[in-house]
Amino acid sequence: MIAASMIVPGSSTRLLSIEDCRPELQELHRLWRELRGERRMPARRDFDPADARRLLPHLMLIDVFPQSPRERRFRVRLHGTAQVDYQGADWTGCYPHQKTDRAPADRLCEVGDQVVASREPWMSTGTLYWLPSKPWSRFETILLPLSDDDETVNMLLGLTVFF
Image 1 (cartoon, rainbow, N blue to C red):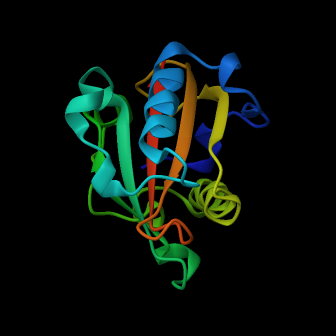
Image 2: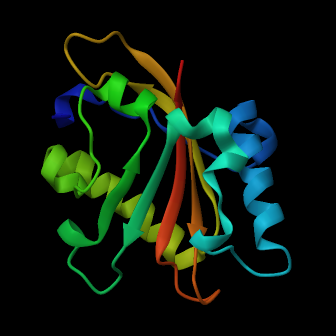
């Protein structure tokens, strides 16, 4: 469980340009752009994990239920092994509020809500301390919207790299 006291206050910064991001984030963003073509955003069916094999340990797929209450709006469908290893827990099949304290879960949902509303990528960087047994860790993350109808975001494709 991630406790609010383990998140370094003020340690996360939004990145406004993909050029400011680590190569892994740039690679996933480039694939997302190619998959969307002339559309606003690609669909989940467009994404073949084999096309991002090197990134798989860092990936997350998150189902979006826009009409649901915040605690049930985002459910993790896939939680990459590198994230599971670092966090010490597999979030697959769970909502953030089931795996962390309210404040960090609410923050994760706020970011998800912004991606859903804007239908645009979200990138950020910062420092986290997830578990008492783990060292401070820097991270970069990207969330990319996916849509079956090119209007309503029904899934987020995410990637987080710890370094």
